Length: 275
Image (cartoon, rainbow, N blue to C red; front, side, top):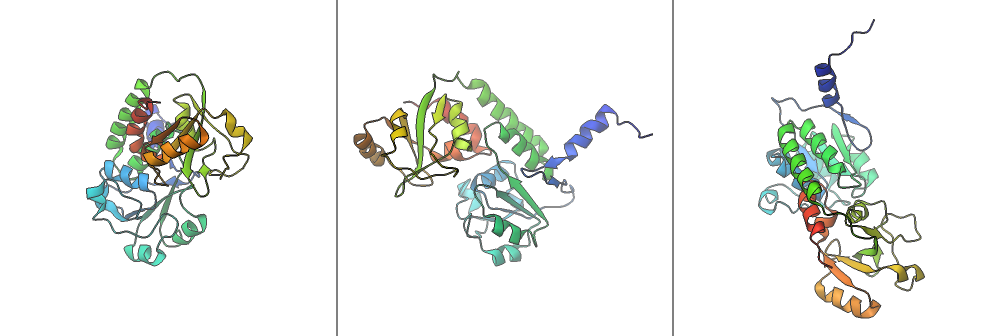
């Protein structure tokens, strides 16, 4: 007969099951060892630093710019999609952290041939950050700090006002060609917390292009121009508003698209956006 686990043993067993976005189970780094982490995700690099793991970060992308003073000392290994494979090899990382949307699968598969542990992330809504904090906090032995971030995030959720009456919006991330986000992205799900419904293009792409002549855009009540990845400015917003005769709001793209610890500020930013 199989021996039954006590409640304490069951809890400890559950804590050891640290699964990433594709279901891979990861082991906790022994307390007497240090990891060598390469992060290919800007928001994750920021989160790792906020977890106190900056000394274990040995590589980051050129887009990993926060916290600015800390990341200056961490070697760059290319971009999110054009990484320097050989430079990463020379850094001898024990862990690689990637994201399904931001990194190319063939590149990750190539890196997985010599990086022992590849942690895949894919948060799709703000509440997924709780699991993200606990996954990385658990793997890298900073669970207490991860719980502090969870509490701070929960406080921001508690402060969110009730969603407004549903408003159809168009979140723009690029021009020439104009591009937006689909309704199943982190950005679109975050906007829902404000009562804003992202317009859906007639496309299966997560980041589709669109044309302002599309008849379905007539129902859009508010256009949001994001400051990243395209560097939209207030001048862009004013010019577009004159062109389409709809309200256009310039928004901080980092606050609305970066998950991880930035989401704590992001929820507050979303709640206080003035239209």
